[in-house]
Length: 179
Image (tube, rainbow, N blue to C red):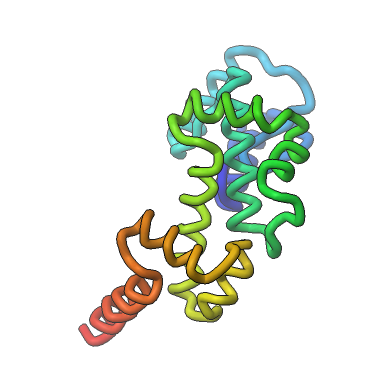
């Protein structure tokens, strides 16, 4: 679950099936009681129809929790954490960062740092398209050491300079408006 819409879909399915829950967070649902396997299977099936998956094994759940902390931290938090990312993730999940990093890399095939970079670049793209912040403000907001660092990372991931990416998107938007 990575959006409010996903949370609403899960809540609706839980209510339909009469399953009591304590909380619904991004990527996690806390049920009030254990539920029978038949009800768990019905929930899995109904959520799968909506494109959502129920994870039962501890490793998969931990990986999803790591992803949710990163997504929340980059895409939904007003400010990036005061701590560095590794300390923030470790503190948020109450696990040693090395342990989290090793499991994440083993399962995902990329490091947590690479995953963070990919999401930061997606956020940069989004902010560039909104055209409300300068590149300097975006670099500051996403805790880049400099605009040059942001630009280099952006180009490495996308193959384009941020300014070129922005101009191409604006041209496409203008062309669509003129049609």
